[in-house]
Figure 1 (cartoon, rainbow, N blue to C red):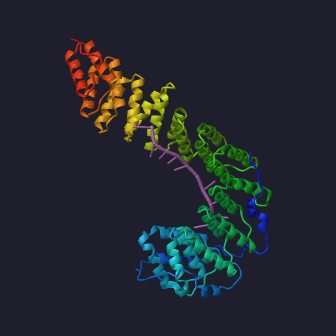
Figure 2: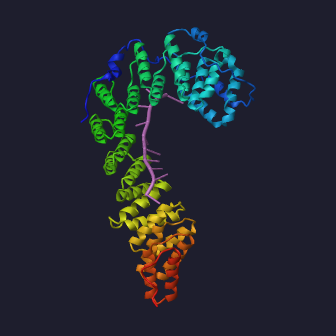
Figure 3: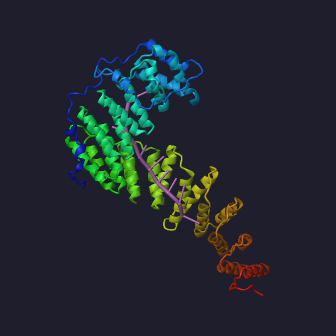
Length: 510
DNA sequence: GTAGGGTTAG
């Protein structure tokens, strides 16, 4: 059962932040559709091929003069125009990386008529296009364009710093905003808190939340989810469980992300059964687990050494209309292989391939080896192993020397002597050096079947390589050669053994 | 324009 312990986690509880009155969402008056003229205008900045002679002056701090210019609490800033931003992003992405920075020079040329909204759209476009540095560069010049940053501008700047992993700077901008009565948007707060949590700076994240709470922000479910992940990340899984219990009592409704976050935490510390209980609970609440939720369980059970439970998870997943993805299969397959469940692994492998997923070369090697190792205990697996092995060759995949050797040894045990011999030959031709055990196995297997002539080249090869087959192999060979009346052969083998410092118990027949 | 998941080497 999942325990509930009241603890320090109470600081995360929603009740702490119930100051809803001051915070307002974007006003309904926000024009979501922008003037098409403006749209064309900003786009043209990116289109004109004017070369850049512009050098930047990276101002790291937001000039406080600029901030002071901002009209405090006067309405809420306009949200970036999604359509416009998307279009800009496409244009930015269409440019080669080198030319992207030239956009800034073009902005210079039209800066007189640029509005803050257009400026924000451009900033946002840089962020979405994964060019936070360019956004920061552009922002450094804002005052020279005669523009005054609004809360949208600064929210975007926080995102840039988060993207760059410069969380101290992000914090500083946030502090400045709060100090100046500017409201960052929820997305920004979430991104910032998430960035902090991902770095394990949980205290800092809680501090941010506390400050935001003071100015009337109530944490959203997304923010809770980030914090839960943060708690799990730093190993405070028990607290994450407690927070989940508290969330359930509060006004913020947990969603599937919430459950997945805690489940993931539990799975990572070997408490997969409890994670499974949470899945049941989520289902009872009417939440729909998604592929990530299930994948969490695959990871958990695999780590715990119970990969077969994963087969059940896979089944449940399909029953619940959730399509397993590549990660689902890969995690499950690796778990099964790690814990030597080759029979189940080959089934999962076949299913995967049937769907059209590619299986990596290294995994294929592991699978073949796993099948080989298990084949002495379970019937039918040698055939599976051999088929897969041949398939790898057909597909041009590189077979690991250790896989080759194990396959050859297994073929010997399974009395597939010819296949063993052929593969040994092939292996040597490929430049691999099979070990003594492999050589001996093949020699012995061939001798036992009276195929001494085919065994001799192996001995010759071993001698050339300076390897010493065991006296057992020499004895077998001499015995077989005697049997076949091949005196010369028997003498040669005997001589080779003596040369290697070994005295075989069987002597060539006179 | 807010939060997500995976393994491994005989």
